Image (cartoon, rainbow, N blue to C red; front, side):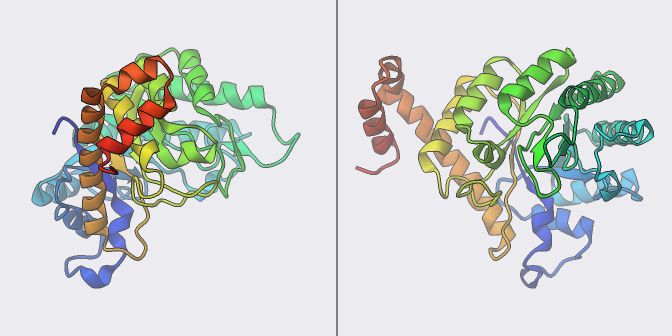
Length: 319
């Protein structure tokens, strides 16, 4: 298969009644090693790695038959008032330094990407923040991080709203692409999360088309959900046509990153759930190829919805 897969490491601490191995971080890695089709681990920094040795991480990965895919930043609660956007310059510098440390871990582990999602860079109320100041602080922060690691892909994972930040400083794909243009670094791009795109009312496939066509789609985090909340459900379980179209546009834009499943299997066996997501993606990949063979692009050129949907039904085996 042309793409590699990763899945949410924190999911491995759920349903421990089904796991007999170690229950620490390295036990979670070992558990991911039992997922059929999984090849990569994305670590959160600093939560997963702070105070641990590089050799431990390398050994855990090798023992599980896995590789590091990315380091994903998770800023500490002390930065509740903002990481890159904090009013105190000292805190902003601390957040940037922490991100640069995360980038070093990524390179030392052989990962290709540093993903930055901040739960805290935004605001809750009207007149709380100067939006232009927030923008400039985020821009400068990413420039510093990219310059510190020019040989590493650095990506923003935006989320429009969160319990910690009702309005994120970069709330949409269009705004994120504007930031990419402002940062002006070849190694800066975006990681798009399916659920986050749903939350801001976007069509994920259109967002992938926009970013991928610009050569700035560094990663995707896939899941599903019912609406405004971040449900973290299995990929394609709610929006099957939407999931298929996203996969189609990953193909069409020649996506080269890895596919990461950011789901929350609270009740399901997390190993089987991760395997399900992988198999679902592969199935949709083949169905997207079939759609091409059936001539969907000709009907798209005519904006002929009826013909396109008939072909989608055929590719999905609904006839």
